Length: 271
View: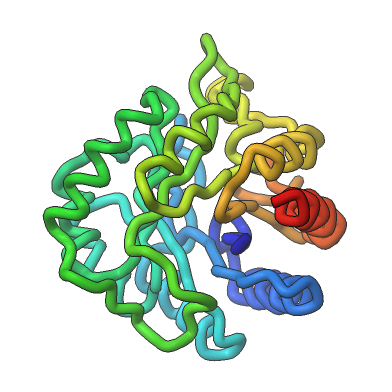
């Protein structure tokens, strides 16, 4: 199992560096490959609320994380023109769930040669992801070209991420069979545990969530079988500018990961 983790949004250099340092130490103790994730722009917002630090400054901070901690970087792209400059820093370009069918964006991300992580839209069935895969496969060079030698392990050039499906208004559910189905397509499957507990637009245009359910969903996903785990974490989630209700507390991460590894070890032993 590899881990994708970091604060939802880049709020400040100091917060990002502290979080990266802590996560690196935790993952070092547990032997988990870590990809550091944070977003320079939270463009997919319900309301005109604070979006983040911006691409130029955000990429500078992510480059500092990469250089200081020798960590591979994952971050979102929202528009086609962003892909090339972001790929100069990021090892993995992430396609947000709401944009997972946007052909031009998928093609532009693929053409950079970086790994592309596609989040399955809340409105999509797992088999719909075959369309995203086909668009990327048709557009990507023969081999991904990481922006440095810091990748934690050899990975295929497409990742597929489950982050819950819309269930009526203001709620998400996770169909664990989606993880099984997407694994049939031959690429690593990631479970995004923190976004899966969101409650979209449930508080007068603000997305709420229930972080207390994250450990339970992680245990279920580990039992089903996943390749990677995605967690958004924050030193003080209540003060976060985005996803305050569903980000994990940074000091909780190690215990949660220990439980996940225990399940993975049990499954591997049985095989």
